[in-house]
Every structure is written in structure tokens, then in C-alpha cells.
Image (cartoon, rainbow, N blue to C red; front, top):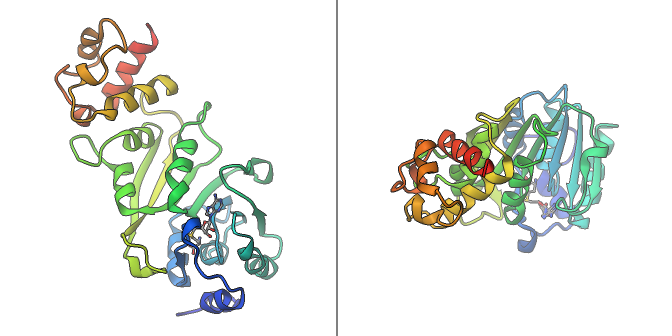
Length: 280
Ligand code: SAM
């Protein structure tokens, strides 16, 4: 394992600070600093941005972000055991790493960040999707972030970038692709992590669009998509039954066959339907 800064190798950091992985916190650590630097390079503009990192753990990705030139990193970690290890990184990269001990679902990081802001994280699997949906569904657009570079289970990553007609296509694909460009930039086998998870992982890079791809009210679109995919094997006229009295006419006007299943309906048609439903 090579070293990209003056700090000890991550395996030594884990030993020194007794950071045995805890399943309840979704802890699967990346210990290869070449790999974390490679992930950091997917973020894009590091030198000109503040980076919000969720779940730094012993700091592998944090070190990657800093060694690759991030202007500043704000790292939010729930596990108090990791804080001393992260403080050593903060000392090595003076003034460039701020650590907050806390739950990323509760902490508001915005008061500590200066735009432009990129988000990078090897997310705990148990909160990854929840955070992604929050970041994709703020009231105002563009959001506080310019890009998200996030590790997910490969199957979840595939749901984010999926196209109509595929098994993975659904709510996550529509929410992500409505207001962002999303692509898988890296896939990782279980052995890349310590301890190895059961599944493959993938890094998804999402770039916020200046405005949504098609006009629609965010709440109405979210509710329509959620209802349509709640029973994804049903025809749209059945899964959306009761949403409006003249549903079939609205479906046709939006370019959707009432007998179509949600999984073949594209983003543009869902947005047209949401606009029509908003007008009721
Ligand atoms: N980024 C590190 C790496 O790549 O090696 C650790 C990744 S590990 C998959 C997930 C990390 O998120 C753990 O350090 C865990 O303690 C932390 N974590 C779990 N739940 C959290 C939460 N709600 N808020 C902040 N951090 C959390």
C-alpha cells in the first residue's frame, strides 16, 4: 500500500485508535489511499471548492480529498472513536479540515461551508439513499451543492442512472435525472473494503443542472412517481387510480398510454403528467 501524505498508513491508524468496524454504523472502510485519491479525483473542482464529506471514518477519503488539493473539507462523523484519528489529519493539513462529530441526518452543515460546494462520501449504506433523496428534493433549485460523488451498493447506483424499460428504473432514476446528470464513474469489488461487504459497490457522480430538465412541481412529481411505482407491475390507469377524476385523458395528453406500466414511462411524460395534475 503506498502513502500519499506524511501520515501513517490507514491500517496503523485503525490499530492505534482501535477502530474495529461496527456493523450498526455501516462501517466498511477504504484503506487503500491510491483508491481514495482516485475517488477524490472524480469530484471535479477540488481546489476551488469546499467539500462536504459525510462519514469520514478513519479518514481514507478525507486524505484523498486533501492530498488531491481540496480547498477545504467539512467532515461529519457520528462515531466518536474516529474523531482523534481525524484530528491528526486536520493537524497535517492545517486550516483545511473541519470535523463535526454528529449525525449527518441532524446536522445542518451549510453555516460551515462557503460555495461552491461539492459533496463527496463513502456513505453508510443505511442512510445513503435518504441523504441522496434529501439532496435531490430541496424546495429551491439549484441546490447548495454543485456535484455529489457518492459510493453506493452497486444495485442502488444502477437504480440512480437507470433508463426507462429497465428493471432498475424507478423513483430514484426519475428524481436524480430530473435535476441532475448522473453517471457511474467507478465500480468496486467487496475486497476493496475492510471488512468486505456482501455486495459490489459503485461511485455515482451527479452534477446539478442549472434548472430541472422539464418543468414540474417537485412535490406533485414526487407523489405521482411514488404512486406509479408503488405497484410497478400495474398499468398506469390502475396504479394512479383516484389521483384525478379524468385520469385517462390526462395520461393520454401527457403522452402516456393508460395501459403502460410506470417502468416504460419517461421523465418528460411524468413531468407533463405532474403539470396537468398540479392544474387540478
Ligand atoms: N469514509 C470512510 C471510508 O471510506 O473508509 C468510512 C466509510 S463507512 C462505509 C461509513 C462511515 O459513516 C462510518 O465511519 C460511520 O461511522 C459513519 N456514519 C454512519 N452513520 C452516520 C451518520 N448518521 N452520520 C454521520 N456519519 C455516519
